[in-house]
Amino acid sequence: MANQTPLGPVQESSTPEVKFREFLEIRGEKLTEPRRVLLRHIFDSHKHFDADELVAELHANDRKVSRSTVYRTLRLLVEAGLLRELRLTNRTAYEHDYGYPSHDHLHCTECNRVVEFINDDIVKIREAVSLQNGFRAEGHRFMITGICAACSRARSPRRRLDLI
Ligand SMILES: [Zn+2]
Ligand SMILES: [Zn+2]
Image (cartoon, rainbow, N blue to C red; front, side):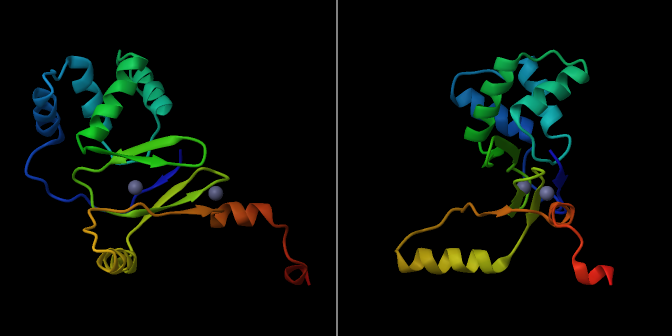
């Protein structure tokens, strides 16, 4: 999946590994070696990825983590607040939530590119609507779907005027 991630990291008090281990301990589970391998791989770089891409990447790097472990660990990482789920038109993608600023996305339904942006007005609308409804907002999901500039250019034939 093509990615554009211009945002810088935010400083957190502990590492994703420490946070995940704490989360697992509360559930009576352990940070097993395959889970640790997975966690390190995921938190190596910020991008949007889906489960199949992750499995393919791990196998390309000769890391032996089973598909079922990948799926189950992704679910746990979302529950632990380390990853965020992005519902795209045709699949579910994941990205870092922990240690990364809150932001929104544009999703091109043609090339599947996901672009990140921060717009303070969206947060203002969120707060205003919440206030009107006596609601305390903790977050929001906002995704613009459509066709990116590159795909629009490729799609529309040169306008007649340009050829004169
Ligand atoms: Zn596109
Ligand atoms: Zn993102």
